[in-house]
Image (cartoon, rainbow, N blue to C red; front, side, top):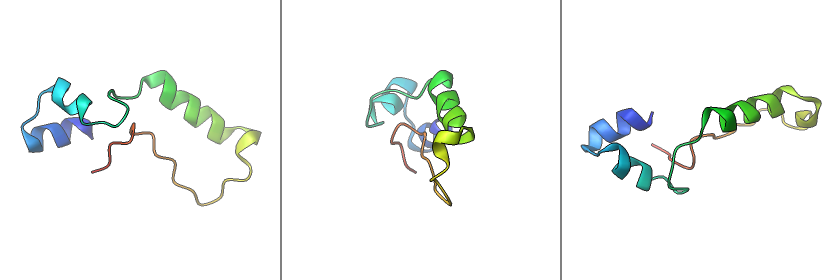
Length: 59
């Protein structure tokens, strides 16, 4: 998604990363931890929820 946004706006990777609220893209490990949480018994109260793992970058 970030690549598409950067290309649409004519931005470099660094400029695109600075546009993200946390200043960088998520790592694979951070995304995997989210998936592991959602697959665990700790997420039993989540029903019909959208979990955004885009570092705050919304298009």
